[in-house]
Image (tube, rainbow, N blue to C red; front, top):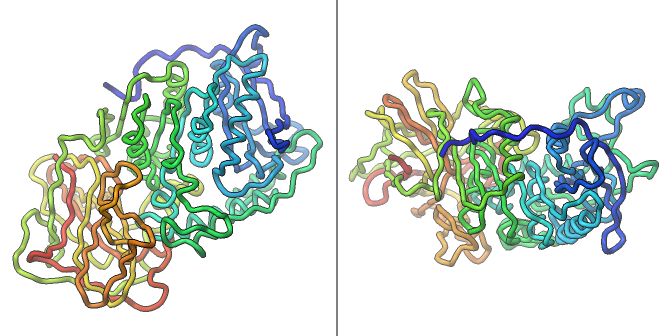
Length: 562
């Protein structure tokens, strides 16, 4: 099977759309702000499907005068879907934008009830055919996925792009390491929106053109005073910690705790936080019909990472999404892109069975070899808390869809294979096992995997990390099927390091699919910090880390390869 699809797309039926801005009351009387778009020229007897785009980032912006007299804001998704005969509802979720009520925290149970009530409202409209779907990227993608968890019978399918399945591991605390950048910057962004102000990261042109969120008629904008997610940096270390300000654990707002039944078309990327891992886990843990797509993109898929030309541009992506809404799949499809080979592939499961883990052992003098040395030795480094992957990494693209471009990795230790004698494909989850001694009871361990071409140019592949206190490999049953060693990240499983004693640190890297060309090499690099993205652990002190090489406790990385 090829992907993207080569099937013929039907032609647009309509040109332009009508707009109605209104408040829709929920069961408790709270009014949500909605912009409803219908295809222009829709015949009174025609019945169509509604697509929800529900967000906490303002459903629409208000232009300042005089710009509002002659300009309108672009909305490619609205234009696309209405042209093909869908209704589009852009929705400010409860307690955000122009909507009333309180936003208790992201993706609350109140949001579930509101999505149900909105679906019910749609089914009573004269243009409705009784079917409701959802679409969106990032936050809006999670509300589209939640639409299926609200259990309204009208909900049929959703396009879910670049969102998290497990909030703790996918974005807030990957490997248990606090993602200070995302939590702080996202919180600051939302504080501005809730005050009806443009966030500082908005462009200068936007600040000139836009006055705030679009109101409903002449109604004033509600005053929102919401708690923000940076509180988890103060209150959360373990998965089962409850944030007293938000009154949740992160599992409470994760999609793996909210089973859905609607058909999903869900997309992620090898280079966008952990969205590829989210796609794989979502695919593996729900037997429903679905289509899973993993590309090589930034957050939102505007950038084809590592390619001079984009083989799958945004318009083609929209056409694939439209095909899915027209005829939701009755099969289970998983499509993924192999970088450097520049080829789309399909598999009934991931990782594909034909890939087996090959161990590459860390040796002195920066050597990475499939042969284990029986001669005991070690490498040591003092953690440099100024080490950074830059501000265009896989984690920071989640905030504002910035392009992914890693700074050259300047880590204290790296290990490189000899040139490959033949082409080889890496597809799956690399897993690193380090035998270490530390001078401290806690710390972060980062591992990066790169391909080095024949000219010595480094090409970032993937990375993983683990906070040392979470190093225990749990024998409990995980909450969902996983593909790397299971760390519960729970308080009862905390296992601090004992200074001077050998400890095993084993963790998975994010999944990747890449062709390693003949003559290329593979390099794994180790670090104890990434200052522009993750919190410093420990907060004080200068830890020294010893990595054991050779003998029975020989550190290695296991790479899925064929």
